[in-house]
Each structure stands twice: as C-alpha cells, then as structure tokens.
Length: 395
Image (tube, rainbow, N blue to C red):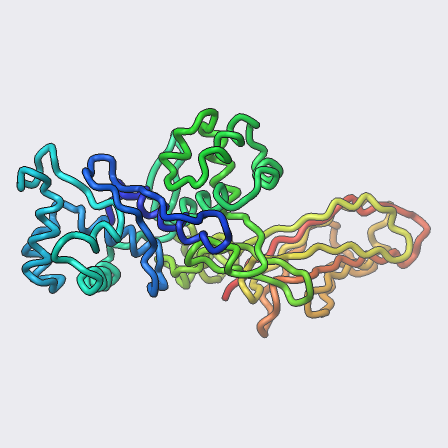
C-alpha cells in the first residue's frame, strides 16, 4: 500500500542512523526535489520498525487519498494539524493536484509544519504501522537501471556502500575502479537513485552491490543497518554472524513441502514436510580439499549467519577411491554428534549425496561441521576432492 516514490526518504533514514559508526556525522538533506523547503532529516527514534515505518509514514501523508477528513476522522489528529498538513502539500496556490503540489521528504519536515508537532507525528506513525502502510521486507520498492530492489535489499545496499571501506567494497563486489571511486567520492549516499546515477555505476555494479548488502559479516548488531540484527554467531571466541533483516514476512511459518510451496522470498525447510522461513535461513558451505585418503582424514567448514536450529542437512562428497566399500564417512555436527553417512561394506552404490532428516531435538545449525573419512583397509588409496554442506534452519 505504501508509495514507492518515497524510497529515497526510506533509505536516507537508514544512512543517517549509521552515524554511530562514524560514517555520517551530520544530517543529510533528502527533501523531495519539488519541495521549496529543504529540512535536514533525522531518523524516528523509539520505533523498533525504524526506517520501514518512516517510509510508510511519508507514503501515507503524501498519498492523494489522505485528505483532511481522513486525518481527522480515521487517524484522530486535530483539525488544525490536518488542515496544516494538507495545506503544505497543496503548495502556494492552496489547491491539490496542481503543478505546485509538494511531497514531504522527511519526518522532521512534517514536525516543523506550523500547527504540527511530535505528538501528531506519533499519532500518525501509530496509525500507519497498524494500517498496512509499511513495506514488507520482500516488497519491491524500486527498479534502478533494470535492477529490482526489495525493501530489505535497499536498506542493506545503502548500508554497505556507506560503511565498507574502498578495499572491502573492491574485494567483496569486484567493482570497476571508476565506479568505486565515484561511490567513495559521493558518500554519504542517501538513495538508490543517487547511487544508480553515479558515473560507471550500471546494472552490473548495482546487482553486485545488492547481493553484497545481504551478505555482510558482523560481530554485533551495531555493525548492521538500522533495525537489522547480527544473526547466527556460532559459540566460541572470534566468531562472526551475518547482518539479517529479521522482521516477520508474510507466509513465514506456513506449512510447505510436496503439497505446497512458499511465497517469494521464503524457502521450505524440508523437501517433504517443512515450514516456510526467510531465504537467508538456508546456507551452503564448501571445502576444496584435494588430499589423499589414507587412514583417517578430517575436513571442516564453519556455518554461520543462519537460524539457531537446523532442520534439513544435505552433504555432497566428491571422492576418488578404488574401493569405496572400504570407507567409513561420518559428519560431526557443531555439538559433537556423530552422524553416519557411509559405512564400510555398504551395498548401495556411492552417489556422493546424503540427506539428513531433521533431528528429534533442537540442534545447532551454526558452528563447526567436520567431515571424517576413514579408509579401514588402506590398500586401494584415493583422494577427497572436496565436499559441501547445505543447511536449512529455523528460529
């Protein structure tokens, strides 16, 4: 229901909220171009929904259907405040739907309208949050140079380009050096419109930045965008997680599997009978080994950034060996539980793919996973080329 034309405001609030990390020290002016006043914008505090609620707030106030009557009768603001808000939007001629109409570009711009104050803003914000004006994380809020961005992707992308060093951006996104220079020189970037308009920042760069923003490592919530959390940090010193948008999504928790699929942005935790969870709750880790198997061999990967508990686990093993019937292959989970994948003398053909059912009790998804390969004969020899682990998780 929200109006996507105010995406620049939504993202600006995210950028401003990163000031604690030293990236932005002053409020940034992101008032709509057609406005005659330009007022610094700062984020709405004491609202857990943060920037998403701010987008809904501005979309509602700027919507043509938001009349004085709606503001007074449905929202409950005073007649004076309702009249002042609509009059500001109408511009100098005092009539809506004319060329001089204006759009509110920031929350503080609303607060500073004569006759409107913090109390009115709080009242409208509460209404907006309960009336469906805030975007869902997977709602597409804009398309830039042909690259679509959801609400979550928009927040993450602007956070990344404003907080990562030039070296980190280069290493993680592989951007053209000219695009990298343009991004760093334009900081703080307050909108995806601004980002997409930079020299040498085209569809390829935007796509890489979008993907990068959803894959940022962190050690605490402070490293993430406003309203996001540092999720899936394994136990142990020096471990990291991933910045995740943990806001509930429509359809999350619904049953899925053979008889039904999940909505866009969600994945099913099980192939046969599972639950719909955010796509970030499914992860994959790989290890390229290339080591000779004689006696016992162990290889490990660290899974992080997922939900707390695992559901399905899939292991793929690339193995060269003259007699796989001599092998014993075991997966060891982060809690030390040993899971037999392949036993010596196994009659079935070795396909290299093993699916592990959901455990009866809650078991950790994040942490150190170990693949153990034992050649119990040792006469044939072989090599472990590599292996991968795919984990579906839940809260």
